[in-house]
Image 1 (cartoon, rainbow, N blue to C red):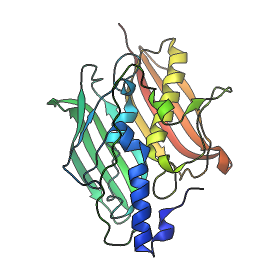
Image 2 (cartoon, rainbow, N blue to C red; image 1 turned 180 degrees about the vertical axis):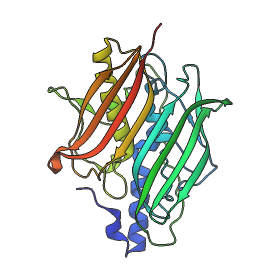
Image 3 (cartoon, one colour; image 1 turned 90 degrees about the vertical axis):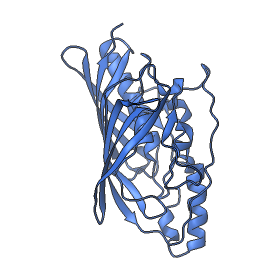
Image 4 (cartoon, rainbow, N blue to C red; image 1 turned 30 degrees about the vertical axis):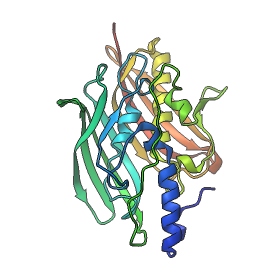
Length: 285
C-alpha cells in the first residue's frame, strides 16, 4: 500500500522529503499542465494550454481537465494541511471548441471552516476572459496538520507536445476497459496517489468521465456528446485497487442523457469510494 504521509508528522525532515517526492511526482496536475502557485515556486500562472486529448469526439472540452485544473474545496494547500476532497461540481456553459487556453479566475473561498472548506471558481477563455466556459465549486475536509516550516517546491513539469499521436487521457492515467465492459484503474501507485495514500482526484475524474461518455454513447448511438453538468462525491479514501466503475445511462427529452456512476475499490471488498452524476448533450452537426 502507498504510505500515508500523516505517519511522518512527528519527523519534519522526513515529512518534507516525502511531500516533495509525492507532489513533484503526482501525475494529475503535471499531465494537465496546471501550475499551483500555493505549492510551486516561480511566477503564478492559472492558465492551462489545451491539447487534443482534452477534447471529446465533437471537439468540445472534456470535463476532467477542467475539474483537475479547478479542484476547489479550499481547506489550504498541502503545505498547511492534509486536504481531502468531499464534493466537486462543474457546469460547462461553453464547449470552447475554438479556445486555445483556459484560465481559472475568481477563486473564492466561501467558508473556511475549522474542518470543512468550501470554494468556487470560474473557468474562462484565457485569451478572452469575458468568455465564461465553466463554473466549478467544491467542498473539502482537513485530515490533519503537517509539521511547520514546509517550503514551496520547484515544479517538475512535463513537456507534452500536442499531436494527433497523443494517447487519450484515460490511457495516460492508466485506465482500461475490461472484457466484462467495466472501466477500471489499476492498483494504487504513488504517481496517482495523494500524499495521504489514496487515489488522487485526477484519475478519478478521468475514468469516471470516460465511463460516462461510453455509457451515454451506447444509449444515444453516437459519440458526439458534450458534458454539460458534472457532480462527484468522494465517499471514502480509495486505498488499494483495482478501481471499477459501475454506471447506467438514462435517456432524457431532446438531446439530453443522464449517467450515474459509482467507483469501487475492488481490493478493499468492493467498497464504494466515489459516486458521480453527469448530464450530457448530443451534438448535432
